[in-house]
Length: 386
Image 1: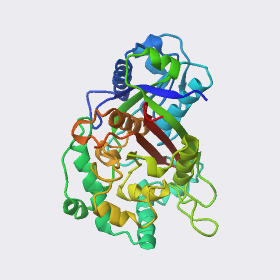
Image 2 (image 1 turned 120 degrees about the horizontal axis):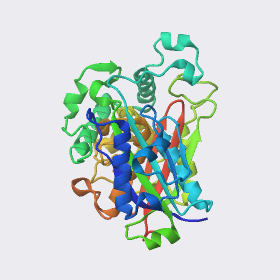
Image 3 (image 1 turned 90 degrees about the vertical axis):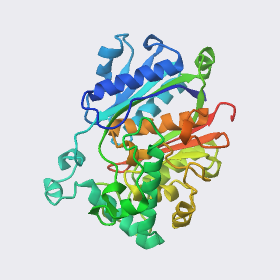
Image 4 (image 1 turned 180 degrees about the horizontal axis):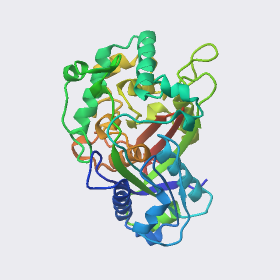
């Protein structure tokens, strides 16, 4: 199988930018990724991209160049960026292209997301009952998990404290002011047990990744990172998901994140124990806690001790969301998955500055999760590792 290399990674600043459109943020990210790869738009042979609410990705050619290449729109909830990346990977592996681009971007208004039940195959009464408010689902899910596995509210606050601390070290982050665990725990309650500062906010930003075949990468003057494997999955029967918060069947609910993580590790030929730096979906503090176990990095219930001991901090044994994650960067739906890949590429290259993971990390992992039960994961490695 053709080995795929990431030769360029670009990011816009995240957060409220009233003077810029979502499309402009995407173009910024694309230009940054092309410059990082040392190529021009004319060198890209195929592209994939998506946005939830900021426009059609293929029309970005109006700004970046009318070269006539195939450019496919992708829309897959929070896995939009990850799904665009998988499409680009498959284009290279199939031989359809030697150089491909994936881009994700969004610009959401202030306030909570306002999905329409009809768009998700649900009756209008579902929305009238308030069940389309996603914060309710996250509160319900983590409350059940905490009860079953002995996770304290203090641990929720510690996860968010780490996010804001890491965000303060990231020049592209939205939330760059550190907050203490006490400030976070004592903030306004949104949906018990989650307070205001434990949630990410719908946000703005763009991210782009340039991929190449080994042959094409060898011609470029860049610092490639190997994309070892990528996998996407949808929910199975018995899962407990956004817009489907009811457990069906018997036994432990299935987990789409666990399915995606298992698939990517099997494809990569490595395991969770080999990863040096992690990106896990943290729509709110509880999500990061659950995903640590669901993706195989610890047993359920071990998070309490690991987080308290600082093991998920930048200098810890399993650094998680070194750029501040969704909590510090916000959630521009189309961009988040590729923001994660950008951060892992930056870490593996040793270019993360004040937030750099020590001891020259070799492997990195990304994971996104979203409605109505979708997940995308990747495993990346330094070129020297494989």
